[in-house]
Structure formats: C-alpha cells, structure tokens
Length: 227
Image 1 (cartoon, rainbow, N blue to C red):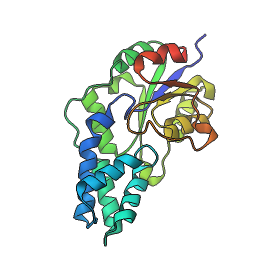
Image 2: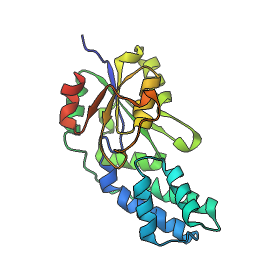
Image 3: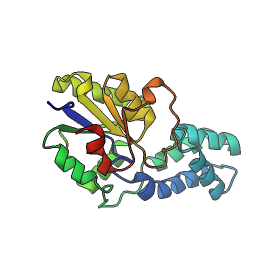
C-alpha cells in the first residue's frame, strides 16, 4: 500500500527556476523603486544587500533592513513600492519547468492526487502557472497571500479535510524551510525539502523546519521519498 495519497508541490524554485529566470529583473525593479522613493545609496549597493539577505529573511524584512540601513524620507513608500515590483515580476508568455519536474508530475499523477500550493501575488502566480502550462496536472491550485497573513498550513488542512486523509498521507514538497516544510509539519504531513534557489542557505528556526527528506534535483524525488 502506498505511504502517501496526495502530494503538494510548491511553485517558485521548486517547479520553476524563479531565482534564475525572474528574480534578477524583479530585484532590480524593486531597488529602482526604492531609489525613486529617495533611498540613499546606488543601485548596486541595494542589489548586493538584497542578495546577501535573501537566504535568511522574507522580502518585507529585506527591504525594511535596506531602508533602515541607507535611509529615505519616504520609508513606507519605499518598502511598499519595492514589494509591489518584486512580487509582480514581468512574466514571459512561455516559461520552462525545472529539469525533471514534468516527468515527475506526469508519473506521480498516475498514483497520487497532486496539488499546487504557492504564495505570492495572485495575478503574478496565475501568469507563471499559465506560462508553464501545468494547471491541468493538479487536482486543485492554491494561491495564498502572505501579505495578509495567509500561510500554507491552511491549504494543507483543506487538502486533508477534502480528501479525507490522515495527516501523514500528505507529502509537501518545496524549497522553503519556513513555509512548505514548517507549515507541512505543523499539520502532521511528511515533508521533502528541495534545496534550490536563493533561499538555499535558510537556517531552521523551529523544530518543524527539519524535513523528512532532502533532495537537490527532481530525479531524486521519487526514489528518495519512496514514491
């Protein structure tokens, strides 16, 4: 009998190489927005500090730290405008999936219910999903808004409730210890950490931040997690 009945995938830096394809331009636009709001540094200083902090903090915290360090007379506007630019990147009409991810999805959906659980701007995430052409692979897609305090545990609980699963029958796969791993553990699900992207240096903050499995590429997902 299969250990799991449903698998939840994160989107950014789990199925899509967001750090490589979208973050560089989004980061530049965010820093340009802060400079337009009076940030007292040059573009490269802003970009360097954002990259230095990326593995440890959310972008609300990152842009707040940048503003506190360099100063501006419009602190609230600088942070707000930076977040708007960063979380609403320019998304091309077609995007590639990370190597091996489509093969995993196509194989796994033969035996498991697949869910996509992602966080960010609703419009931006919808554009990414459409550009990847993956919506038809998932039984349900959840797009959560972290700016109003939504967390992925709400989606995981909805999956467990709607599917009638016990918590350990759900596997959460994602690249953020502080999100897919922590929130998955807090509902009792098993978790697989996909160590990829600019958050790869993230430090565990809670006991729930320690995954059941860790992989660095998609070819290892099925054998590592016993799927």
